[in-house]
Amino acid sequence: MISTKNIFILIALVVIPSTILPIYADDSSGITATVNKPSYQPGDKVIISGSVGQIVNSNPVTIIVRNPMGNVYDVGQEKLLNNLFVHDFVLNDDSMGGTYSVNIKYGPSSDQLYFVLNAGALTTIPVFDSEIKIRTNGTNLIKYGDVSVSTTEKIIKISMDTTKIIGGSINQQYQIPKKIVDTPGGNIVLKVNGNQILCAQSETDTTRILDCSIPSNSNEIELTGATVIPEFGPLAGLAIAISIIAAVTLSRVSKIHF
Image (tube, rainbow, N blue to C red; front, side):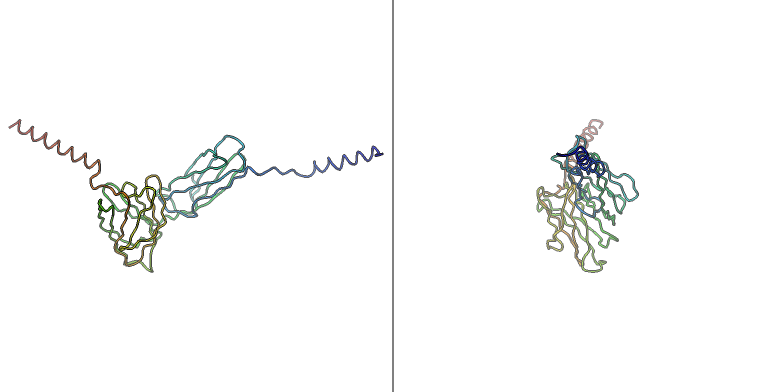
C-alpha cells in the first residue's frame, strides 16, 4: 500500500515542475513577408506580399513604409484572404534615394523588411500630350533626340547619341505610359539599331516599365506594341472641330455686318 507521504511526493513531482518550467506559446500566428525586388527606381511598383500563421481576429494587416529619413512614406491596411495579404504602391519620381523600411503588424505579431531605392538621373521625352521617362543610375550618358510615331506599324522611334558611354553598355529604365504604346497581356518589343533587346518588363495600371541594357554605339531605339497613340486623339479632334465651328461662325457674322 502506498503511504500518505509517498502520495504527497508524487503530487509534488507532477505539480511543481509545471509551476517552475515556462510554457511557450504557439508562434503559429507569426508573419512571413517579402518584397518583389531588393532594389527599385522611382516609378517602380513595390509589391509586399506575405502570410500569417493563424487568423486571430478580423482586423487587417497594417503596413507602414518609412523613407531613409524615417518619415512615413506609405501606409496600408490589407484584409487577409486565406491567411495571405498583398499591398502595393508606386514610388514617386521625386522619391529620396536610400534604404526604406517596411513594418508589418498583425495582432501581437510584427515583421520588418527593407528595400533600396536608387534615385539616379531622370530624362523626359515628350510624345504628343504625354512623355516617356528614362532613368539611369548615376550620370545619364545617353542623349535622346527626335521622336517619330508610325500609327500604321505601331512603332515609336527615338534617336540617341551613345558616344559618351564608357564600356560596352549602360542600363536604362523606360517608363512608358500605356496611352502612348502598349501590348495588353504581352510585352512591348524594344529594338536597338534594328536588333531586339530583351528587357525585364513590369507594369502599373497606367505605365509599362522596361529595364534594358543599351549597347554603346547605338543611334536609335524602336518601341513596338499592339496599340500606339493616334496622331490625332479625341482631344485633338475636338479642338479641330471647335476651330472649324468658330471659323464658320465668324465668317457668317462678318457677312451680316457687311
